[in-house]
Length: 211
Image (cartoon, one colour):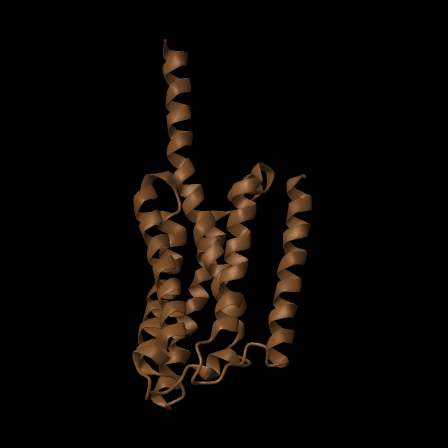
């Protein structure tokens, strides 16, 4: 399948995914009793990432399409995560628990604030290790946020529940935004890992030409 066709296919999948997340949230399919772990929304966050990893690992054409995307653009998109300050505000008003809101909020702010620097300065072979490190930190922040959101009730049984994250508009964050941004991080890491191979190939060609 050509790159253009993959682009249309992926755009269609993203559209359907967003509509599903929005519709399922409107129908309260992700809503969970505060006394129960948020399994539905946890699955909604994990399944898209698992599906992407399977497709990426099993299809060479799709993998080629994914790594052909602009790493600067994928990284710059992460800058919207400065909106994590909303978690801090909601915690201040007693809507979200501190055990979730503070790490998730400050972590998102840190990644979002440094995303432009990572996109402009680090997204090239010269800064490969630093670029990968930044992406790994972004992945860690997202995984930590999902884990804390799912286990907040266990960590603090008598505290404020994370139930607001299972209904609109907040439910779109774990069911769409988080897995999509996690996928962007994964693609960027895969791209950066390939930069070393490209450098070795260029070095080998240069050596042959000189010889």
